Amino acid sequence: MAAEEPSNSNSPMRITVQSNPSASQLAELGIKSWPKWGCSPGKYQLKFEAQETCYLVRGKVKVYPKNRGGEEEAVEFGAGDLVVIPKGLSCTWDVSVAVDKHYKFDASSSSS
Image (cartoon, rainbow, N blue to C red; front, side, top):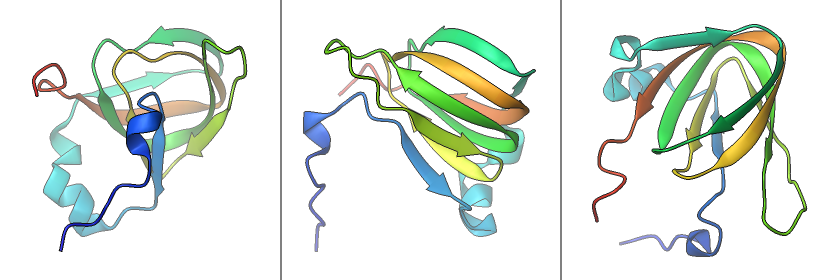
C-alpha cells in the first residue's frame, strides 16, 4: 500500500509547510530537544547546506527562494508550522514578526 508522491522529484527545492502538527507528532520528532534559534524582524539572505526541519514557536516569515529562472514563488509560514527546507536552497527570509524556532539539520541528507 505504498502511496505515490506526486511529482516531488521535479522540484527538489520546494519548501514544505505542515500547519498545526499534532502534539503526538511533535513529541515523536523530539522537537523540544532540538536547538533553538531566533531572529528579529528584517530581511536575511540564507543558504541551507543541509536539509532543515524546523518548528516555529512564534513568528511570521515569507521566504523568497532564489530560482534560476528568475521567478520567485514566495512561501509563507508562522507560529505552529512544521517546515522542511531542502538542502542547497538559497533564499531571502522576510521576517515580519520575530521568530523563535526549534530546528534540526538532516545529517543523512548527503547519503542515499
